[in-house]
Length: 148
Image (cartoon, rainbow, N blue to C red; front, side):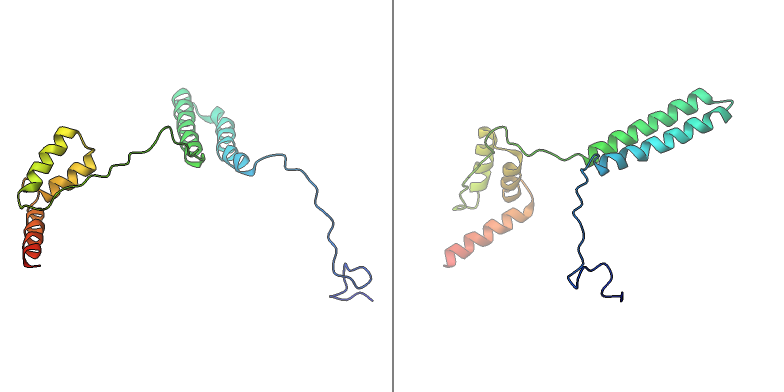
């Protein structure tokens, strides 16, 4: 007697599904990307005999746009390789906050040393020549250190 729970079972054992040993012949992502651009191109070639006046310009603009789209899509889906050519930039700079006008000297020293832009931007932010917030931070720190 065959019922819902005995269908495809052999001698009361659990359902047996054979091994699926079909090899993968194509990458589905590549096939999908190619079909996105091949199918509209073939459709355009079928429609092209009906275009009378601007056949050459229509063909050029269509295939140029398809080429640009395929190039952008292929570059967007491409996986990057992570490699390092050399050692990274490891900057460990120390700036003194002992005096109120010390950051002006630190900024000029950093410009002479040729430090990278992010470090110079931080020093400029905290110096008197930069934004006004830096001066308030330094003055507050100076008075806090004096009170402690």
